[in-house]
Image (cartoon, one colour):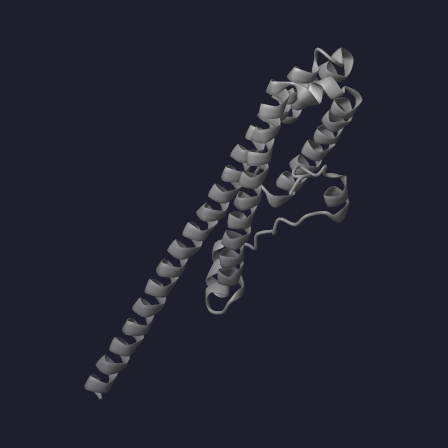
Length: 190
């Protein structure tokens, strides 16, 4: 009788230790995935800030041609660049603003053909193309990371630990159809 009781207590203790180890391990995995998502968003923020810098340079190069419009754009860019990114919605909002500013810059360049021939303008446009590609890649990394996080949060039994510890799903970055239509073609010759 005593041996059966000791054996039962040993099995219960073993199960408690196994559950505690599982919760500990799952918590560490969820924290890692959460930090990876935050890091990916931070990388997008860095790339978006580089795009803002490039657009600022474009606006400054257009300043000699369209002083009033360029000054308005420079002020707009300076204000927008201050925004921080902590969610996928923040990325979407900034990309919409970037698209609007870029469209306005393209309208200025269309109105002043000599601006389009300016070497500084051309070099800056090449930088914008490069940053555009970097943002695209950063978005892909974020969505892949968010997928891993969402799987861990939704799949059983880690979903139990995730809800118990307050981990939630991450939103994916999507491309708004209206934004896609309004974004000027950065690669017209390809």
